[in-house]
Length: 140
Image (cartoon, rainbow, N blue to C red; front, top):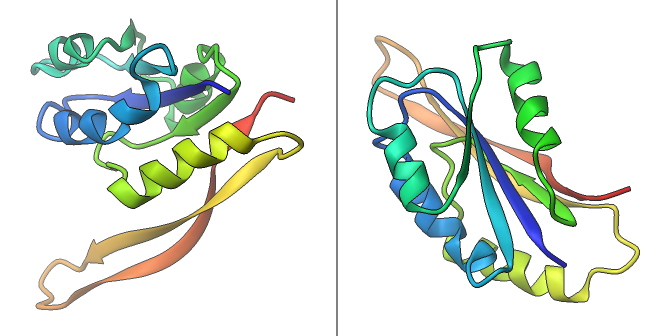
């Protein structure tokens, strides 16, 4: 099974290299594709995306959900992994996804645990909220 990694971007040059590097084992050598839908970046976002072989589409901002859906509509592989530009995969998770794609048959999706880090302005504390996200799904 092949994987489409989809992202929406706007001025993400600082985040993209780390995120792209984390997904390259999943898409290189014909194993998948990276789709980027950008909403008018003025930094090096598009240049960086193209350097990693991403298929880049520039579209006006339509709202968060509509922009994400537009990126997903452009995916052409068997499975889709939707990430934020500042959301690199840990090596262990990338390895688990790669192994799962080799044994997929009747599955419709994967639940991926995520940690949302947050901090409150004026506060000296920060933390994270663990959540589960169905971040990858197969063609129906």
